[in-house]
Image 1 (cartoon, rainbow, N blue to C red):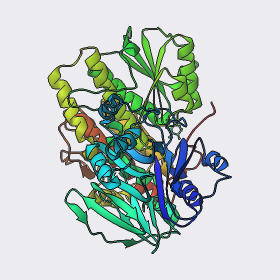
Image 2: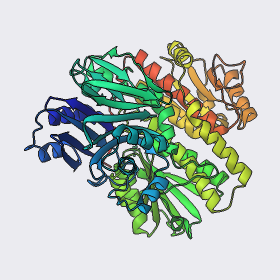
Image 3: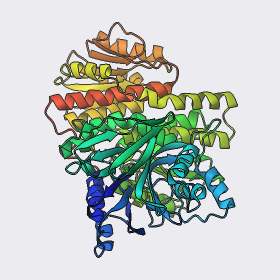
Image 4: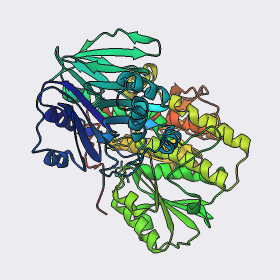
Length: 602
Ligand code: G6P
């Protein structure tokens, strides 16, 4: 995820910005930049890759005296990680940094281009600075121009803008992406999270959505739709490690809670009123395609399996899924009417990358679904869809899985429309459900507390079976993988209907069955399967919107109208269960033994 820092005051600005950006490194980025105005002079530096590159570029520069300054680390979403696409973005006499996505940037860009504005980057962000200058016309009132600019933007943003027209002022706005203002009694700091300003500022104000304003002479003027407003500063935390985790105990916990928000980013600009749009795809990718093959490893393989149900059922296109390490050596038959999709959080998994190279050698068209732009898999693929989950630090994947699954659901609707295999009514009902997903992913205190209490009953036994049918089978596989990764307890995911063909022999009171029982998909079928296990005395934890009297433990879910909403809600339950079991067992949740986040060896 991108990071923002800003500072207005007398101190040396380059170091404040670079040190601040360093504190945001853990969020992941692929380019960085800073812009400083002092003595009415605008200076800026950008570099791709690590901050060291930016440090090297700025080593002979030192800021001196009063000035304003902004900095940014960019995690590419619109446009490749190049220097031109790196922030801050320049107009003629102003610079802007931005986190989030401007949804209507295409329209704004066209309007500005018609007025003769020249765009240098492929980013949505650049529209902000040109829009500002189109109102400001070099001499105008900076704040009035900034307000007009903000009023035109749709989507999510946290943004800082500096301009030679008012070289003592930083303009700021927040809507949907985080931003805070720090104070040390003299100067004013900005950042997208606490860590860059801990140790410098002593007090903080966390901006609310819809707030904007400016900082000048050590003071901040704050506004919202109702005009100027007062605000109350709070003491700033002092513990950086805690601040990186936004107060959560583990990165994995933070990432589970983040899922609702990142899903909005995944859908932004893609889920439209009446269809799904991927500007990164073209119709030609699907020309002559009658079949889809998906290759992945681990958690990504589970999202692939989920996607295959959706693609066949809704888009009516045959779809097979393969574990990449198996695919590589099975001498697969590859036909050129097959679109080859790879899914990878990191984009670096060796088996997946090699599978992709094989498919390319066989002449297949390729598409990757990935969280890291410019990763090996993205570079190797003809086309790529970024999941926009932001960096994932916990080794056990959570938000990456959620966003991969969402991309596959969106892709299903995209292909279905292209192939004319879905009615308008069905498409509309899928889109409606899709828009509800962020809600289904919200973690309530009540749910988390309940799983915390339940978890103490699941610390022993001779194994767990997560069971489900249809798309809830891959979710069962993923639930079991999460549990074994971080608890080291034996867990398997199984199709519920298959238990009677062998595994039921294991059933006794020390076998824990985690039953995924959605109401919207084959409820009666799975109910009978769970009853069979209950009759053999297996301990049952049922997850369902429908009360189930044979369950030993029961988590009642809220959604019951659409399978994908039930899927995402149950996914959160299984993630929290694993987390709480692992914490009770005293394990290192974020760095489980024997595992690595990115496996670049065969
Ligand atoms: C490793 C990780 C898993 C991950 C798998 C695939 O095994 O520990 O969490 O699912 O690699 O990674 P990818 O980056 O390709 O999704």
